[in-house]
Picture (cartoon, helix red, strand yellow):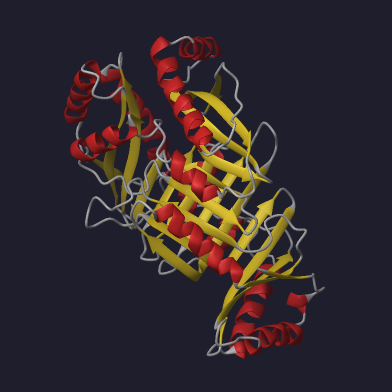
Length: 477
């Protein structure tokens, strides 16, 4: 990747921008027939969700990723719009293929602009389905999608960065490309995207249709418990989905806004397939985060509801921290992550005592796991080892995955799968696509799951799933 030092006001001088793009085109050779130009610029702070509301098109790919941390005060939001280039992948090598694609793109990328800005330069946005091959022929999303957006808007506290990415080849109309970039940038600079305008949800009427009914789910839990007793596997995560129908099309932006306001400690995300369908959610679970070779991943397993009073809430939390069944389920996830990282030569560090991650309607046992990683280990190589963890699959993993395929009637798609981004230096962040929903016009499919281990009770597991589904249902507008 070629990095050109910052040129002041590149996006405020139309002629300079045109000449720069023209020079890039004229530098093409028979060997290098295409180049990618990535231009970063600081702009007045905008709300990336408001930008998504204004300019996203149903026929274009988009990606939205936000995390507000009420404890540390750190928060960021990214909106990625349209695709400059993309790749879809499938099969057991999908993470390696994604890594090769990213590295190939970066090898022919010219990066220019304000390099010191957070989230400057090209970022690649990724969604990987739960399984490496589509289970259903009608799957909305492929097993893997990686795309470099034409536009990326990121807000980190009071700093806002815009990145324009463009493919340069010998046939591109440089004058037209210059005008397109210039006009879009002027729109961003006009400060039109300051606030989200949301509509009232009082009049919305929703009809719920279970994909697999309660009796069927409880039967699946009982069957799983018998297999656990016979030591066929020790844990399996069973999911349940419901179809939700609305009298009017669901509002993607309003639903995302509801999620980020209601669940500020979660990853609020949305990714589209470019065909009008969107996968959204508010996930409490970080699968992996890498920042300057410092890795953090979460072991998140074992759940309890929140109490209606402070005393009840404290008792439920204390009960969860002392629950033999939940602690055992949680330890399985820790052991798996530690084993997978160790096989890559990574030495993880974590507390032996889990803590509580408390959300508005549910609380989980939570253990952050940290490590320093060598520079030659790519994020996607680690991701390939970690996904799926026992928190969303089971133990042993391959046997649990086989059983999930056999007993679940609904395609998981992106549910329980990695959703996130990677930058040009190998930093990135992926959440697990839980507490999620697929939105398709006036129809939504809501997903939630529960971990089944020895000691699980069908009624309690069903109640846990319904609690998780309710969180998404309340956010839909």
